[in-house]
Length: 362
Image (cartoon, rainbow, N blue to C red):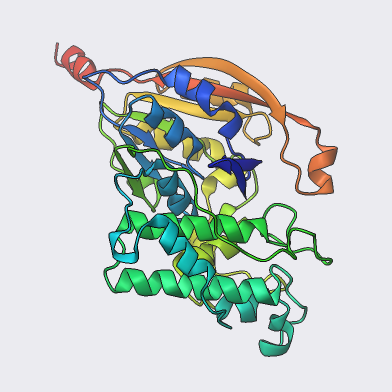
């Protein structure tokens, strides 16, 4: 699935809900004076956070991947929060980044053909051309320098990093994710990397973006919780390891043909068939929120009937079919599995704890 930010293709992201974001936002409804915040616990690239923010919700978004958190934050800012006074404005910042001298840094020596001769890799890693990889290194370094010198606010830093991530994605020599690279260069991969400014609303949303474990997000009883767990065997930390390295700006020890950064600590129980159902029921049972919206895809390895049955022991459950959408097909295996995925939204209403406690006392 390709996510469109500011009128251009930006990120191809597994399981994206961008095509049904407005439908999900409609199901969530408009906030009332008694509501808390909308908590987007598996934010991905932020399509749901953006849709509900447009309806007036205060948003708290989270993702375990730093790159995803950065992309989400960039979708929620506005001109009022990212004026870039220390670098002459947003467009001036992008011009400076596009004009920077290339640097032969970590991305160049790890994820371009230079990897074979510099790191003595077993293969020539063709995620990026050498020219584009050196530009990614240079732009990442300049953003870090500006931030360390206090020239960027956190929101400004994350917006520029999001623009770098999307620009890098446009010239990445992949089939859609970063689980592997292609043997032959695609036409898009041979184009020069260039940041382009996105269209920002005049006023940004009221939001907070976190980058942590889903079980540690602050959630109150009055908050509305939205969950879109992976459901499939694809571990996002492994499938998007290159954007994660760009987002962190670090130089991890990498391994294997693809130069995979260490990712096991970010492995999700929701990606294991034998653990996903129990993990999800446990998460919903323990959250303080009484109102939970849960996205479900027929592509997932949790059976819908089993899921509804298990959640019915936690609260009242209703199921709404949203749409049949084209399957994300990064490889031949996905093609064989069919072309359409059915998307549903489950709503779980948990009992009022105050009422339950009163009933117990009487």
